[in-house]
Length: 189
Image 1 (cartoon, helix red, strand yellow):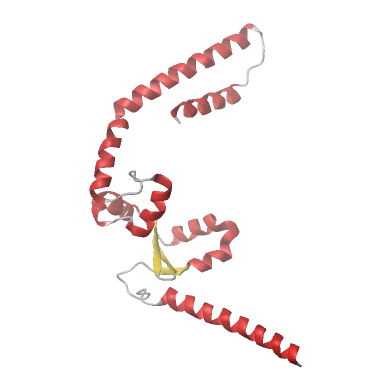
Image 2 (cartoon, one colour):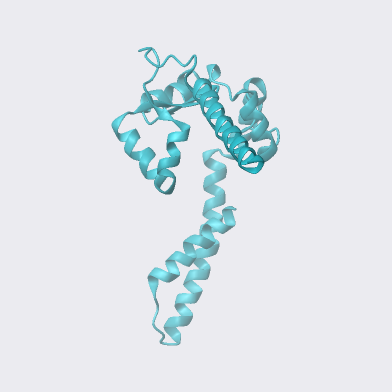
């Protein structure tokens, strides 16, 4: 009798813990999110709902984005905004860029990966990093660099084609052009 009572108690406590956890996550997900407020993008579910589409998540997100250009997914303590609307993207990245910061949470994550570079900072530090990067990515610098890499690889391709022609060998242009293209981007790396 004592063992049955222990098994029942442990099982009931486990189920109670699962139910309380579920209720807590549900409360955290839906509380204070302005779900029916027309000033916010419509809610399209929760981040937990994405688990149903785990094997085809990107396809599912694409289908949803075709139906609604901008929508929210609710998560505990926050809501995540998704948009494919060109006007919204331009607003965030160009028109009102200064109003949208990465925030402390995202900066902490990005700093681990990118250090204190342009992808991990905001405000004046970002402006300084962008100014420094703009010199390296100017049209003239990129053109000069890509032209020299192209010339170098074109010379290699001409040499290989000439050798194969002299040896009277069959030449697969598709394979060679693919190798040429990859070696071009390898130099950029």
